[in-house]
Length: 185
Ligand code: NI
Image 1 (spheres, rainbow, N blue to C red):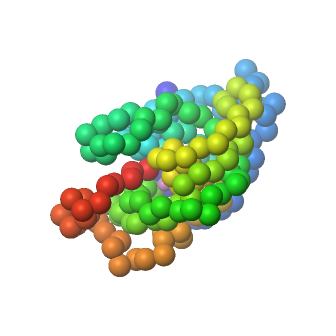
Image 2 (tube, rainbow, N blue to C red):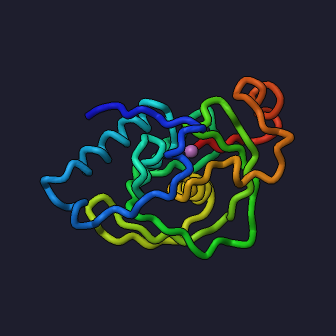
């Protein structure tokens, strides 16, 4: 396994539409793609992220990984088990939205308040090519929208409506964390 380099804002790979993964390649024992998925998981853990999309490690293909264990930094958020999604598609975005604070490994130190649909439908494949379909709400829905945006060449700044609270991490903690909950990703 290996740690992968994080692409930061300004790197054109973050602004490309990622290519779908060939499901035959996914399950081919000769393919390196399973090792790449393991590297993505290891990199997400190492960086302390809740999710990671392949373009964020310089590969413009449609894979995201997510995992969230409850911790003191974000009290009250429900844990998300380790999940690997291949060619994920979201639909049925609820009209109801909720604003939450987001961050991104590709935007290093920034925190911004982002409106997201509270409920969505996910269609995807797991790392072995098995179909996944489920309705998702709450924190997991936010993380999914954030990560799958990366596959469309979007970052959370593109979804913000109000930039007046856009903060660096230290200022976020000083001025906002006591007033509002934080949503990391
Ligand atoms: Ni991100």
